[in-house]
Amino acid sequence: MRTPGPASAAWVVSVGLLALCVLWALLQT
Image (cartoon, rainbow, N blue to C red):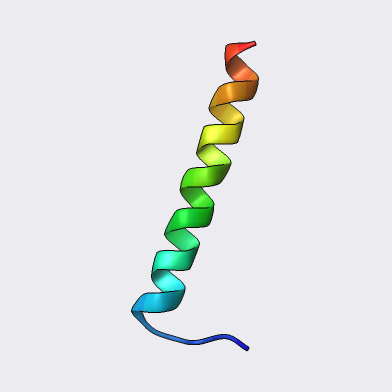
């Protein structure tokens, strides 16, 4: 169920930001 277009791009960006937040939190320890 992959929807090509801005929707998928926004999803990828949101996941990337979430991953960055998790990595940053881990590095802060």
